[in-house]
Image (cartoon, rainbow, N blue to C red):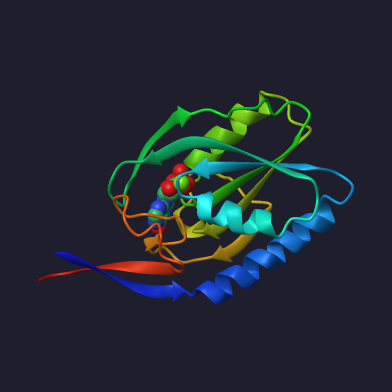
Length: 176
Ligand code: IMP
Ligand code: MG
């Protein structure tokens, strides 16, 4: 089996939408500051692009948490491999996620962070696959809802590959 990647959402469409969502965040958080939490590794490309359009006072911290093994099927196990450097108490926290699939990662993260007493806690996701949801969790900001397809690029990987693609692509597995 070999993999083939075809463009699903092109770079221009992605980045226009990210700028639009950032403008909405600027409006919603006017007069306040925002503390972005980027979920490594997948959200890093999205978080950087989003952050560049924020005009409100912005800080950013990184956390590594995952519910995936190496394939395309969720293990259901959420693992925290790098915690935040800064406390979130009293801050307007915005979790920046690459994709919401089963919802397990974000449900776990939301519970964890809410125990640390942020002033507010919201979620911004680049992609949402609502058909795959196991746990009820909704993002406050969603760039694109997509069907149940395995996607890569713009930070998202298949077996650690394709994160560097500047677009969102669909992986097809073809017989050789
Ligand atoms: P959840 O906990 O099932 O919502 O899974 C969310 C995580 O699974 C994301 O942060 C991704 O790392 C990974 N994931 C889910 N769907 C995809 C996909 O289509 N492509 C690549 N990674 C995915
Ligand atoms: Mg992820």
